[in-house]
Image (cartoon, each protein chain N blue to C red):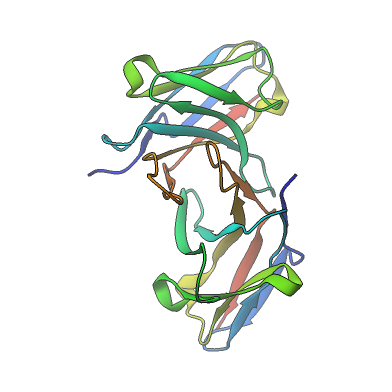
Length: 116
Length: 114
């Protein structure tokens, strides 16, 4: 178990460019979450996958954002036509589906996006 | 809707002194409550969690937290702070049903002075 990994760790881009981030969850986890963390704030939920199905999206996820999880394994988060307001840390987390109760979400190290 | 308030943006504690970080939550039912720590450039590490039962929960690195339903609080404590504890601390609540997203507070940055 190598934990949740995210690539790249850092991304600097110019306004208007497209960027894509990748998240590899813990292998046996079927739930995957994306969060966004801006400076001085706590992480905010963006979207959730159970296996390959995207079941929930936050209002924070504008039309320029799209997320996929083909085959229920890794996930990608793409931002089109980036804006300076998109500068943030993008965190991925995974968990297994609980039988009852709650299963811990394990977080990756994040991808820090800077839009110039 | 659920929410979390961490009233202290920054706290400075001398090394060896005790620590208490405050957290208040708003949630209609019995919450799942968490404390996470984030070091610079790192992801989030779970310190401890409360689901039910004993209201005083023990976590890693010598941290503990007490759930007080009457005060809607879940304060984090440590009896003796080490310089390596300097980091950002986040309190979070999870919805108990559905996909169980986490709702985080804005965090408290802990500074440890020698």
